[in-house]
Length: 214
Image 1 (cartoon, rainbow, N blue to C red):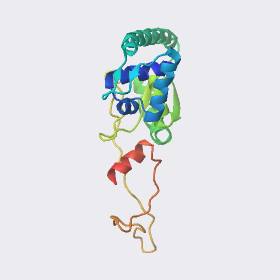
Image 2 (image 1 turned 90 degrees about the horizontal axis):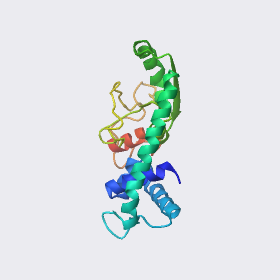
Image 3 (image 1 turned 135 degrees about the vertical axis):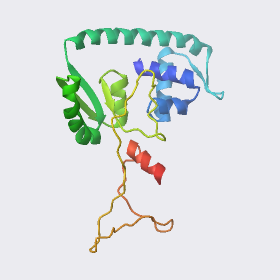
Image 4 (image 1 turned 60 degrees about the vertical axis):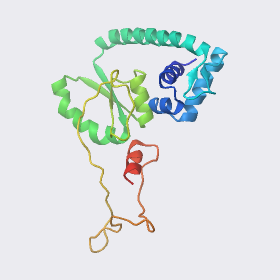
């Protein structure tokens, strides 16, 4: 049994929606469904009534919900207590960010703030956005630095994970020039002759932002 299965189950109990909880947990809906079934197999009984809409819990699911919440609370309290004791003697701050932020933004930003914040030691854990969010929620990092956009929400609980705006960035299209200095791919394109462009990965944050603009 894995802790994330309990977190998935509690999210589903609150949202009554596999798709909404999958988005909240930053995984695909099929992967989320597999983890709920894995928890049910571990317990040996169904927790979710899949014949209803919105999704509801079975009688066993309702009984198990309280146990799941108490178990997670006790585990996190123990973890926070132990890590608090350890970090009082270890002044290294742990950051996590996507590769572009870790390479382009973080070194300059850290240099500007480390003296004011009294940071003596820091470590960056770079990865894709899903891994970075998981690093934060599982306590593997102290801070997550990431892009945000109103139409591409990160779906982290703001009460548990308060945030600060560090700056603004602009996403602009650029094109290689022709011999006269004009863009080879001028905007706007046309529906019958769409422009070619170098895209971000479809499942990346910036890829989803570009899809919204297009």
